[in-house]
Image: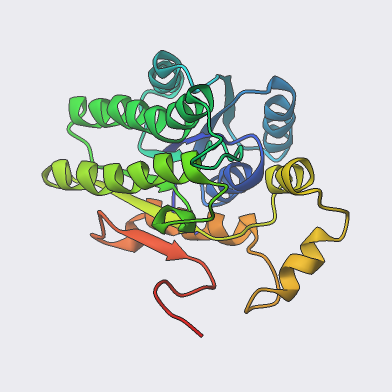
Length: 258
């Protein structure tokens, strides 16, 4: 449909999972796409895949736990493509920890990746938009767990709840600049990262997806490509004037009880 024709889109955490799905969807909709990731190999493989399909794409290796790198990624994309029209903050850390066993180091790592990195990436992207007196759009990938979550997600929930609040605050601050900022509280999704997490922290076997699906209302986990389509809509003009919305993209209903 060409929803992002001519746009420059930056996806942080775009080398795998939901982020990679957003990269592919944005390219499909006509965007020039840059994306960041910690691991160079999957990033370069995705660039090669997109280049073979005739797309213009760029990978930036970055550990976004470093706030200066979070800002520098935006600067590198502006240097390469001239601007950033759309930003997606998809990088995330889901390492487990409860209130009682979370160390200060684990807590700080969650804050660094799940909250501080989006903050400073948005800071740099919005500064570029304002310097050009141009509109822009930002989508933050959050989590339905930011409403409370499981006990073993304490530092993750703390950071992601902060990101939900930041999304609303930044949207309010820059609505007169025509910069729209929204978030998605995504539910349980079948990604490479989730597979690794289930195996590492919950002793899951090869059939964990089937077992999880049996416990879910729709009989399956969410898919990255479905989330990506929703993100593209929010990045595009087709989402109209909506800003400051944190949308629950999930199959469970907040506040409802059986």
